[in-house]
Image 1 (cartoon, rainbow, N blue to C red):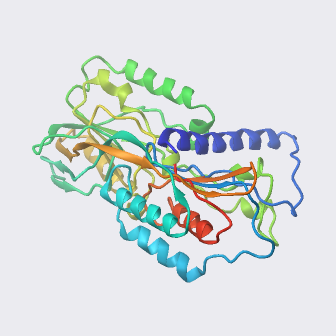
Image 2 (spheres, helix red, strand yellow):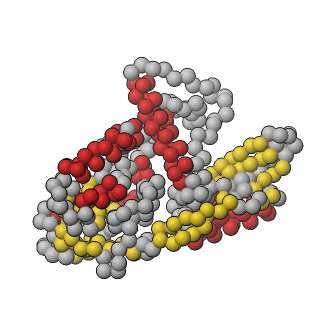
Image 3 (cartoon, rainbow, N blue to C red):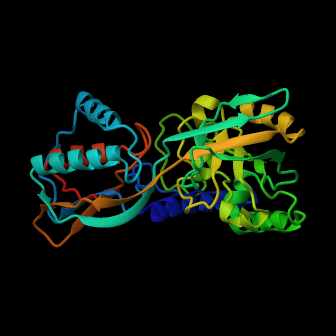
Length: 375
């Protein structure tokens, strides 16, 4: 499942939920299936990579009568641990390829037929080092940076240097506004860029405040959900579940900034340092024409104070782009009818949760009631 496709699915789901919730708030009612109905899988395509994924395919045939044995908690924990031990499984990174090999071997060992893999050429941005340093003034010295902006252009080892300048008046839409009408947010950013006096920001390191992650709760989904499984709880309880997610942004596209002639960009966020460190957001970003770094809320607050004096600042981002090959794995368990069942997830991810669908796919394969396609 391609990155753009999977992320569009999730983003469309959340946007639809927000619109439905808004409709519900003015009196619309939503039919809900009986609690006895089985829950539908609404999103098996959360992804951070291009041309990577996991699907389960059972080519016909129903499971044998009776209860099918499932994987034990110990086995699932061990498999998740094995996945995490691969390291970052970002698309095209060595850990991603290692994980795909493990999945292929496990599916074959479960007795599934491994089909020829589809392969895709992919430019993998692999940041090796980044740094930010204030070069003069009372706050001179290195600045702690949490992460780099996904697929942003790298610099030389000497970095780029320019005065640190705050993007005064930069649009700060809420996450809900950005999800419901992203075109309006893009238009606002372009209008802001167009209003900047010609040449006034050329050669600067621009400090841009972002309201990310915005505050959201699980009630963005309840208005469109067909089934809720949480015995003893109602929708008011679901509304207390935090769904603030960095991947939802809003994250600007730096391709809209090129007219400003910037040396680089530093994004401040509302996230804490532990939450932001190493984060791969926005994973939907296309290649960015400028080097960009991301800092947490505390560092951002200090940088805003320092930017008033326009101190000389050096931004360094060593980020080689490697041409890699990504594979989509397909494994099939032949059945006894023309019916085909597909369970799909992706293989790339950042942590123990995104994406652990491959672990579940192997467990399904081992149950001998299903077949797997990873594609």
